[in-house]
Length: 104
Image (cartoon, rainbow, N blue to C red; front, top):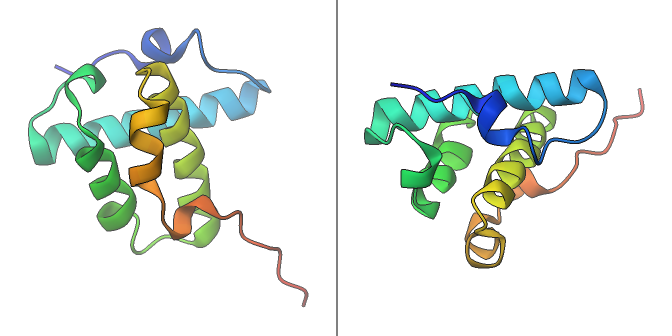
């Protein structure tokens, strides 16, 4: 059974309404993918490998901007789990860099 990400992330979400809404939607996508692949129904049961798998494998075909936005959501999840110091070093990848706008 999936958890309510709004309740789980409510205390750590900041920013504009649209940003919070996007983070909640993306957190739901992350949670569902991890639940389907790893049978982990709650972020408290995740390991760093589950988030790394999502960022590395599930986001292969999306734009750099989308990957970066999911990275921001993943950071919020890590913060909420109180795993920042332990997990963030293991989650480095191309998704951590904000894409530069192209000049046409």
